[in-house]
Length: 76
Image 1 (cartoon, rainbow, N blue to C red):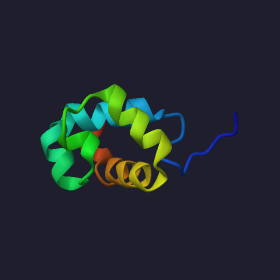
Image 2: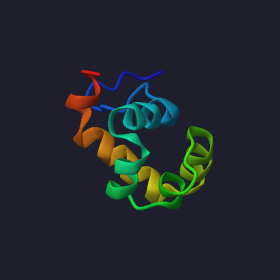
Image 3: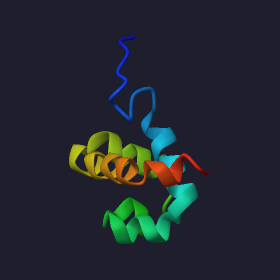
């Protein structure tokens, strides 16, 4: 695996990113920040991962939110 010191997402799976966001913000706030159905209606990690793996624009928004708040998420 290639070293990517400037990539804050390097080595993180989508599941880890999503789990940290859910633990910090909760689904209600995630649904307010990123208006997608899997966060607003009967949310779960499994259903969210399924949607995010198929929908690049939504995954991009989740990853951007993680990067914007990385300083908060790494403290938890």
